[in-house]
Length: 435
Ligand code: UGA
Figure 1: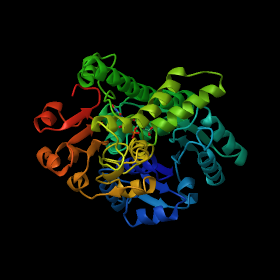
Figure 2: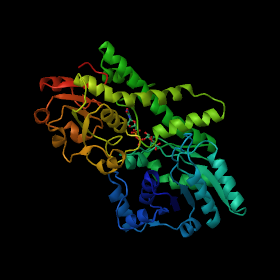
Figure 3: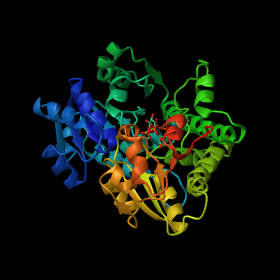
Figure 4: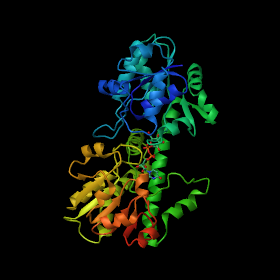
């Protein structure tokens, strides 16, 4: 199959590289000349474990190409995936579809022969209809079918998620399009991944409903964590105790500082807006958003109460800035409201992150950065773990304690065991667990 992938963000680049790895001929297209030039030099613009090797292997094999011009790749493609960004629109929280529609118009101008145009970006229900209308308006003789194929991969585990998905959702009623997408995903049938065909609007809805449900699951356990702290229960055991019920499932029940990232906050907001446009109040999702925003802001107060007094003039060491481990992504990271809250309280902040510090500097320019977690802790009055990078689990606790001026540790990811922390003499606070 010949595939054109429009957009080389997370989803586009990972999907393009994985499709090439399946044996398809893939050209990734992006308007950003700097990004394409970097990719042509073999540099990967995002941090994603394993992606550099996957890209290099497939470029070398001649299956993966990069360009800024979509004309030739679209003309020869059997399938054109639209994987451009759909950021939150300033002001109203709706998904900004201008990049998707611009891509549709450009595709329409150069498409040749039967081509399936597929939206892979997360798009509101009905976007596929509009993409189809735009293409037909721009090029009435185009022989295209428009399908929706949402992506469910997680940053930091993107390649594994792409190659071993729980399911693949393809939304189109067009038989020819179903065949093309069935062929594209055939290699995954070896991994027993179910390919689910639905209508286009249903596929678009599945993506939003999945993200909203996962965000709800996290927010639910976060509230149970708050209550567990008050009543002396252990939220990790509660999560396991409920999660072993197959109807609930153990995943996405890790209590923490609130969800962040490029998807859950943006997609839940967009879903609420879509619903309101249709006179539907998604009260649960609205509550999830409000609870999560409050929670992120409340984390700075958790640090000051663990310290036991005002943080004015005190130094707080922050370990982990990205919204989750194994990424350099800072979008909607819980560290941002936390650090801002600490600065508002008059504290000085010194932070460490294994890969996210360059990105973090743009969001949080007014803090000190340290290349080493122990140096970050040196002389600090309190230390907060915000992102559960594996290297923080392995820190030498005795050494860490000796670095700190006050042995206060607030662990927002439950990385350490309370009994170990007590044994080392820390004043330790975590999420939803007895001290
Ligand atoms: C999420 C979904 O998990 C993917 O299925 C989806 O494809 C993606 O959004 C998307 O729409 O593109 P991602 O944002 O990369 O993926 O990362 P997650 O692992 O889902 O984490 C999101 C946030 O939730 C992070 O801040 C994480 O720390 C938090 N989280 C996750 C928890 O607090 N507890 C959990 O149990 C799980």
